[in-house]
Image 1 (cartoon, rainbow, N blue to C red):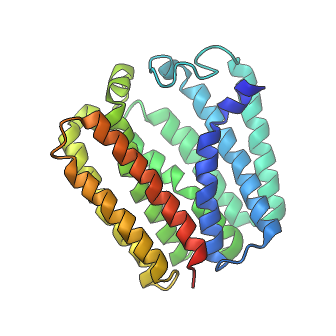
Image 2 (cartoon, rainbow, N blue to C red; image 1 turned 180 degrees about the horizontal axis):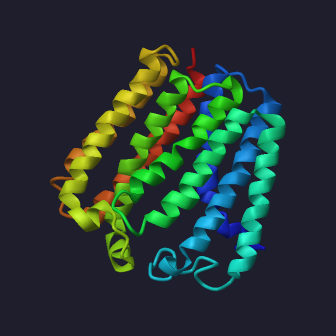
Length: 281
């Protein structure tokens, strides 16, 4: 059973659920609405788990070429492809039923759109185009919007700002991974930006995305969704992230710098997700 559990990429599920909670609590202005909250988390957790299993299936041959992923259950032959597909379908059905029964059709539609983008577009194109990271960032930006829509039942400016923040945050986050895992991606033939265009070009792109992210994050306060406590916390960590990005041009150890950028990006999104519920207006 542990292999089936690992197929769902529990770390990815947990990280996404933090953003779901932030989106939910932004729309509800900090009110929990426990039943709806738990149903939203559970339904989306199953859908994300299904998407991850499908992704594992599609990536199984590529995963065998990468040190980081070669021991995944499908890559290592610990779970058959047929059983993985059946497992993924069951997870998707459960998730869809929960969201349909307890949230609303808009939240379900947004969740399924993210599922499609991740499983079909990202999984099938990440080994073919340098834009795979951008496609993946769109899918990764969906969970907080699902949380938001489960409460609001509408796609408004708040949902758009959450979406833009997550897209812009993920680009430097994933570029950092690609830098400190450069050799893995190069050996597997995955055309990420550092491999195809070089690390300097990637560092410049990271700075641009971080600046855009900081602007999008500030817009939550500027448009009256959050208060100045949120803005202060987001700005302090955000400018620290930007500062580390600038320091990267002087770094003599790109893998180490990339790992530090990755870790600080996790702190950044954690602060955002924790600050939103405590400082909604």
